[in-house]
Length: 260
Length: 309
Image (cartoon, rainbow over all chains, first blue to last red; front, side, top):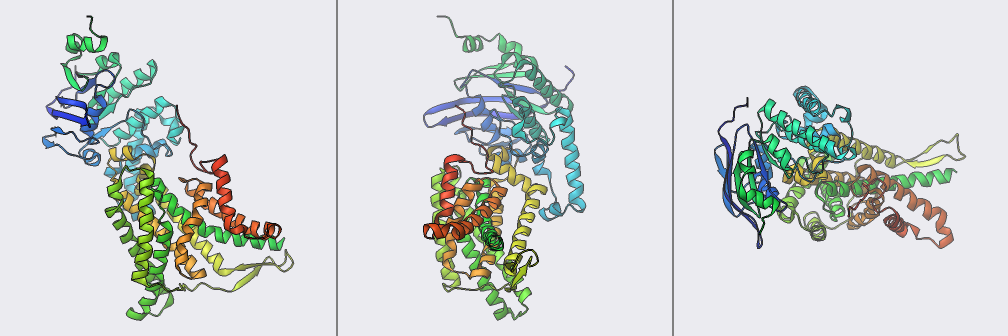
């Protein structure tokens, strides 16, 4: 493999999350290295999305903490996480449906827009230049994701597979250090899955973006990830390269059931 | 024919004020999912502030030029509305994030009465006039086309221009600025908006400020036509059918809905009233809204409600 995997960028330490009496996550620890593609897999209800939501700051775990680029935190809100350079996509699309593809992706530049409201409205001086620069960046993403033809289309009118790309595009527009993908291939056909896998690999390759990926489809995960964490009933049952995980007894029984 | 057109124009003018109030509703509902019952109280509060500031500016600052004094009063009242927006977000809304719609509605009901009371305490409970120097004299137009021409009020005409300018300004703000884009994003999906680093709390303050300015403009026009009094809060009730008709989430809907209801009220009162004994103006809007609820619950411009099962 040509790419250089770096130091640990994201370190998850002993995370436990409960909803009332339900234990969603129990004492989960794992780390993510810079530039790698790290997958979190597991059967339905294993706690994958909960894990992602903890990293993203949507949920606050009762125990444990998360270290991101050397800074440890146990309580964050999604906006602070976004400011630190973590972007995400959603399992059930959460796009701005009434807005065009361009506006959706442009909204990902939100944190980087510096000029003030008054200048923006008048489109003068630095504000106009800034808007143009962001727009150029967004056009790159649109080219990259091959959705040029749909630029001005309201996102709500696009087919599902393309909406998933726009979701990815909006996250990419943030130029994130770490990209969290929540089941990017859920509900896709084989061809769409291949396209999406290619985009994820290209993002990782071209921009060096670290990717944390939740996925249901074992085949896809094994093909594209560097290392895999396996969750089952909120506990970690496996961690390692796809090859190691594939041969892990616990993982096999979680996925296929044990014979008694 | 001339009489019909006159009634129609009168209806459009009344409808425009409904539109302005409804616009405030829609802005807040879109961005925060709060059905803001207090919009009417905000109109009253803003109008009171404007009326009193317009009195106080010449009195205490010695500025007698009507335009300058009114401008200062407008800016002052605008700042009061900013403070109101900020306080409401800080003390009420922030603590009710993700609560049921009914809870939020009750909260805004509370805000309504609080604002009314506060308005009386701070600004007094007389009837005030706002005089922004709009010409009151009626003019005749189209005298060559119709016999006797059509009588319109210059004041209504200028009010329409002010309202149109406000709507144009708002659409530039929403469509062309990054903040506007962030507002639209929040309106569409809170969670996704947060994930790309849009601060919800700040957006809510902004949107309540914008709604406050809209309320101020509505209150100013209304106050200049009819005087500022406490019955102004009931314009919120007038605006309810408008938002049902136009769709709760649609800015154009609020405008078109307001115009339809204004025109419908006047036309039905004048042309149907004699047959049923009058009084149609009072209930016309509500019956129309009821009809819409039965046939097209999302309103004229609202998003179609699709329930996936």
